[in-house]
Image (tube, rainbow, N blue to C red; front, side, top):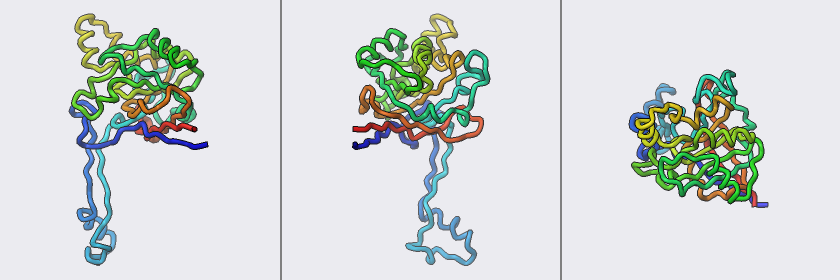
Length: 258
């Protein structure tokens, strides 16, 4: 049996727009020449010419939010409570069992940017791919944002998952979901226009807020989901162990056994 590991994570990088202005990661690269003084300071009397090729080490300084790059959101990100009033767990408390499970892909690339996915949409897609959800499966949604990544409009691209659609998954035992869009919910620019018309605050972050009823996690800013089959693969997405945090970075991968 052959095993194929598919990278479904984006890069952490300076020059590609993966977050709104003011929220981007910042990476400072220190090369083998710039680091020489830092290395020789550890060893009194050591000179640059004593080092192989006169080089020190390569190192980077990174300034990040826990929500930069491909990351896993904990229930604590969505609200202070989950499961109808229990304390919401933080990223270091997320059961690792949630993070290594069979995956299911819902293809919603045909929906226009800003569309809010309904229960009917989820049921129709599950019917199309011939799959019945099982508890603990990881459900990822492939949206139009995947193809937009790297462009100026990425943050405003793709559809979002509505509260009812999210709860439909959670009520069937799903505890971890994911999207290749910037957010599990519809892009804020579209929600803002809808809110301006309706003044209904319930539509703001509605997919996230489903975690107040049933605690769950989701991956955001996945990539390369179009290369996955509809099901028959495993996702591994263990988050960084950051004490008391709302999210953790992950090198999410899909594992396909042929």
